[in-house]
Image (cartoon, rainbow, N blue to C red):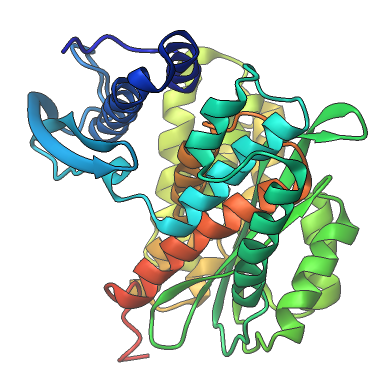
Length: 387
């Protein structure tokens, strides 16, 4: 079997089915699995095959055949192998809820005329039920009830709260818009991670963040000592209103990115990044503030706008120094949620365009349940025994 890259494996699958009918189902699913696994390997390695990259973490090491049972019978896929990094494609471990949610999104697109190819029999086979508006509605209702129980479950003490948002394309009022998916992750007193909640909103405006945070507190979230997030006017206003007095840690990763907009010369960027990182890596806040003062002075003449920006913004990334040293690295950025967002993107890109906000909320909720269950039964994220 060849291993060329497919720019859109889902469209290839639909095209193959449209041309060959159900006789092509197994081959189409095999193509989809193989392409998804190759993309996952590329992400795990940090570089594409034969690509030279300073971010490479390992090397491709061929493929290993594996037989997988599917709705259309047993198929043989080529599982990508690696050297230098542990890797097993999550494509082969898709959860039941997220699979149902994805199929519903496909069915809803077909029913509403959004699908790229209107082949009723194919869509029915993919989704597992007759593709009519009433059938889709009943299937969605059953799954939504299950997901809503998780989204409204009681919460408890949450010392650390991490907030972020991502965007997906949704049909709304006859147009296609970028819809915000608001996410909240908490660290429990025993050091475990938990996805506290998710909400789909038309924007990241204050009113949406405020409603989201209020819902978390009404479900019992309390004891928040620190919030980590990126700088966003709506989120900042909402957290101050709903969780006043809670220490805010501005994401250091995003601060580094923001700083580059104020660097006047490309040749200065690497040194600026190093200088800022040195501030963040200081032993304590006193040392960090001393280094920041020196760095601001260093760039006062060659980059005055950068110096002014640093003086005003970098201190917002130093709140984490209030925490035990063993907790700082985990909580100084929103990188934990960035990884969640990558997993969401991997699962939602198949749908490409959601027919409505409910469909988007359904799929993201299903994926997040699986991630959160893995976290809650997995390793301790923060060692809280001595603090």
